[in-house]
Amino acid sequence: MQPKRATTLSTWELVFPNDANPYGSMFGGNLMALMDKVGAMAAGNYAQRIVTTASAEAMDFKSPIHVGEQIEIRARVVATGNSSMVVKVDVYTDNPLTGERRHCTTAHFNFVALNTAGRPTPVPPLLVETKDEKRDHEIAGIVQQKAKNRREMIAETEPKG
Image (cartoon, rainbow, N blue to C red; front, side, top):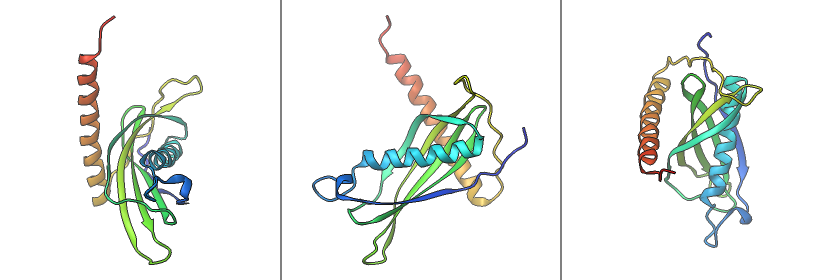
């Protein structure tokens, strides 16, 4: 397979009261679901396959998102394995009343490409050229290693039988 360049997929949402807690901030779970959906579309577009979420890693909420704000969700494949992809998902808010724009969170999602039988299938290697692509690829490697370490630790503590 030839190496392939990833493109950024972007979508916008408006935060409504039913998306928020009693304090007017968006529920983290609602935001995570949107991020997972956009991340899956970016991974699926890259692999040209159906994908499934394997894990969500390293999600830090930097700034609350309030009712009435517009959120932009940007997703891009930043690393690939044999059948897996790490997708970096960033969220920004725009306040339509003040014009303020904030970066609210970044997370990395691991997706696996599936064939028509629902089994993992190879994805193209990622073309990493620019300074930003190299930085994101390096961070994705750290995320992948921490995810692997976490899975191994959990497997060691799982009850047997």
